[in-house]
Figure (tube, rainbow, N blue to C red):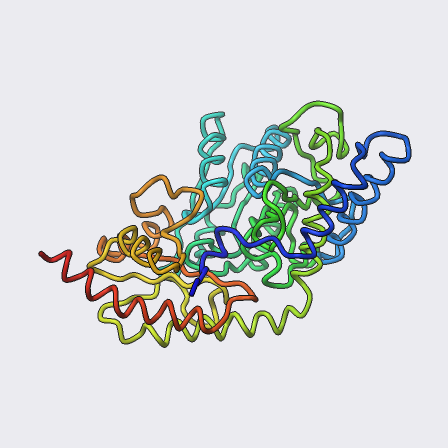
Length: 384
C-alpha cells in the first residue's frame, strides 16, 4: 500500500478545487482586468474567492492580496512593511525557527541596513515571551512569528505575542506566517492583533503557485512588483484566475467540519506516537501532546541518518520528510532543530510525519510497522 505522510510539504488538489479551476480555464478565460463580458466573467471568480477567504478569517475581502504562494506572501509582508516604515525605525524581530522564506528574507533586510533580532525558543520550540518583551524597543517596526512550525508542529503564543508588541507601540506591525496553521485552526486576525498574515494554497488541498496575504486596512506596504497596478498597486500582474478560484474553494473546504478533522488528526498523531514508543531510543521533537499541532509529528531515530531512513521507507511507498521541503537540498540538520539544541545524534536522524484529514489509520499502522522493521536493521548496518 501507499502511505503519503508528507502533507506539510504539499497536499493533493481536491476534486472540487480541480473542477472549479477547469471551469475557469474552459469558460471564464478572459482577463479579469478587461472591461468586456469575458473579463467580467473572470473577475467574478476573483471576487468570489476573496469573499470566501475573507469569510474564514472574519475580515474584509479588500484586505486579501493574492500572491504566488507562501514565499511571496512572506516576502511581501516583510520587505514591503520594512521599506514602507523605514523612517519609523530599523529593528525587525523574528524567531530562530522560522521558515526559510522568512529567515532568508530577514537576512536580505539585514544587508539593507536593518537590525534583525532572532529570538530563542524553548526545547519544545515555543517562543520565549520574556525574550520578545526585552527585544522590543522604540526602533522596532515589525515582528514576524510563524504560528505553527512546519517541522516540529510547535504552536506559538501568537495572541500573547501580539499583545506585547502592540503594548510597546501601536505602530509596530505584527506578521504571522500561517502557512501551516490556516485551515487547521480558527484564525481571527483582528481579534488576535495580527496585521499581516501569509497563507499558501497547496498546503490546504489547493493548487500550487497561489497564496494570499491578509493585510489589515491602513497597513502600508511597498510593492515588490510593479506593473499594471492590480490589487490596489500592491501586487501587480494579471490575476491567475484558475489558481485564485482554486484557493478560494480550498479555503471553504478547509474549514468544513474543522472540529471533526482536528480530532481525526489528533487520533492519527497519538496512534503514531504510541506505535513507535517501544522503538529503542526514539525521541519526539517539539510538543508531542495536546500543545502541539495535530497534523505534525517529528521523530528522531538515533543511529540512522534521516535521509537513509527516508529512502528506505520510500522503497515501501511510505513518504515522509527530513526537515522542510523548501530546504531539502541542504543535507545538514535544519535551523529549527539546531535552535532546539538537540544532540547531534537526534538532529541528524529526525523525520517529519504530517497528515491531512484524508489520512487513514491504516497508513499510520503500515508506516509504524515498517519503522519497527527498518530502524533496527539499518542501525545494525550502520554499526558495521
